[in-house]
Image (cartoon, rainbow over all chains, first blue to last red; front, side, top):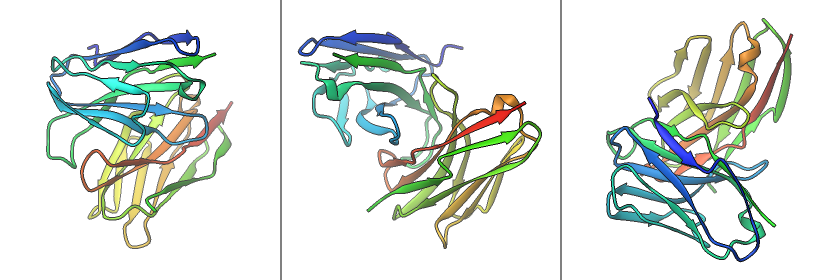
Length: 115
Length: 112
């Protein structure tokens, strides 16, 4: 069972470059999320989606964009990379249920360094 | 301010010993509280989910307790194993599933 798959696992970017972090899930979950995890900090929500075609901002959306054309895929786009975006990025999806219920499944993470 | 604080920041115990990790939160209104285990270089994996009406929940050697009145939770690990070495993250859900508040975690090292 693949679950939530993220690519790439590691990436080094130069300041000003752009890239897309890929996230795919095979559990047919409607809810999907992108988080970033900085050293010594709790995970922060960047963007989330409640279904194909629907996305919304989280706590720290600046410098990022997302799209959700299919249930399976939820890519995160970084435009004009900055050193402040150096972080570990996690994609997650949620099992069906009410807004407050459901289990979160996380991917393995994508470690991004911007130099 | 909605916050989740965990203690200790790090902990070293001998294999076979028990330990307890603490989580205090100020998140309000509170919906549920979750504990996750995160191995180094991996994504978090769910251990337990507790609603405000639950006091205790177990998952194998992991037992979580919740006191919604004092806004405190603990995660007790029994008969620790080397594979328990990981970060343990407390997460509190505010109303609306998008408002998860993550603690910074407790890093546990189980030594042989």
